[in-house]
Length: 161
Picture 1 (tube, helix red, strand yellow):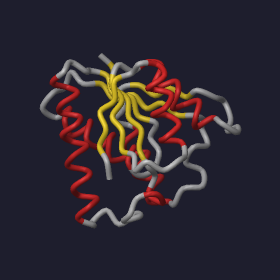
Picture 2 (cartoon, rainbow, N blue to C red; picture 1 turned 30 degrees about the vertical axis):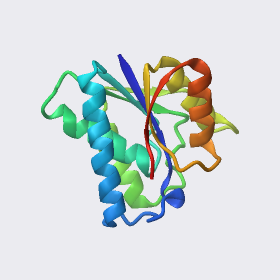
Picture 3 (spheres, one colour; picture 1 turned 60 degrees about the vertical axis):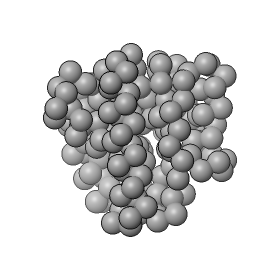
Picture 4 (cartoon, one colour; picture 1 turned 120 degrees about the vertical axis):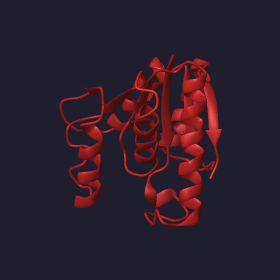
């Protein structure tokens, strides 16, 4: 089974980028529990779009779980090579550290183009049996991805913030 993830970037989270905030710590704990639940249900491949914020928390949770369950695979699904070009240096370093821990890296498009992030999300949903979500009900890419997953009949495991 394959599990994918969609969630908000820091600017849409109530704590922004302050990961020491107790609400962020609680969300990370919930994500770790969802990864554990997905693994217990038979998910062995975990797809991550590797965006800042919740995607990073998800990838880190999979890497952590893999310490006790090495059969799990983490696949980075990148929209384009330029994904991190405008990110702060610390976020780029964190991304690179996670990327080397991925079992597979899939880059979907040769260069950035309008809509490539949404196409990346849909490509993950198209392969997924389960989609873990962190979504506050607002619009944007996460909401669109959840709607698409519903239209495809992909099971959702929602984690609300």
